Length: 372
Image (cartoon, rainbow, N blue to C red; front, side, top):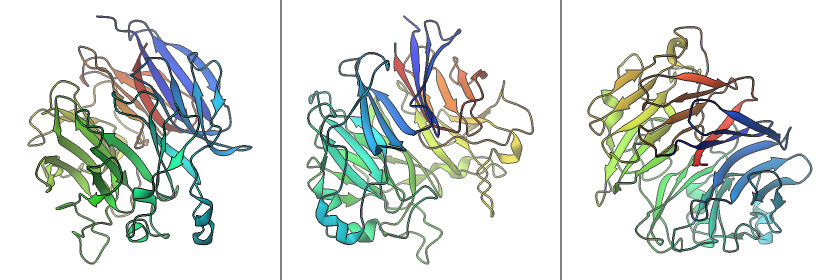
């Protein structure tokens, strides 16, 4: 099997693309849009060619770019994601697009985007024009789910879109203000999916909504299983149950179960990885004790094992943001992460050994692996 892989890297100051034919030696393209915030870049798996980028530029503002030639040239969306003009009275304007998601395999040309303040947008023409998904953005409970004073230091987010590979009408979204929401009718209606997920910053620590869902991982071999890294722990749900189980309680107590992201193994629904961060009282958001490590479960969260071989043994005070930890689908699985200190790390043996393949980039916001 070919080991050819590319890493699409978004940073606070531009984008880079790392490419390798063997996952050993890497060549670098970039910077692309140097100086601009690049939140997310993905490759369309339906054509294996199109790249879509969520950017916040100094001169164009929040926008979407697309490339059909490996990132050599880019074209801006004619109509980027935007709330309807009538929203001006509510002071709701897109600050930046945070996430871009290729549509279902049955819908070539369809793309979805999540933005800040929380908003869901859809394109039916390959990212040229985008429209507001009013089923969420104009929902009667929108302002309860997405209060103006909620969210992260970078603003409140609709930070992820997950599509059920079996059914284009069935989708999940993750938000920083309301937790997880689900639609069964292609986004026309939505309902919270947060049962048993803690929000310890509220008087009622288990509300219907109000959680900060950092990341969702749907298992490719069992789409009824989802893992979640939340602001308040690591969770798993097996549908049709609507109740999450906090599997992070099995993490070592001195490490805890706070982090930004979680990965599911592409062929084993019982295996997942997290990159913990220090979630103590002052929330340093750094590797616990300055000793970075990935933790892996191979039994759906009943137990976790530390994987740190190759990482610095001490004095490494970085963390990994929501979109900056990813996996390829090769055998063995390759894992890749981008750190807040501008380093890129990888493992080509499912986390057993780690090595640094890039350094000195700006703060890394996202890393996405794609076939080359």
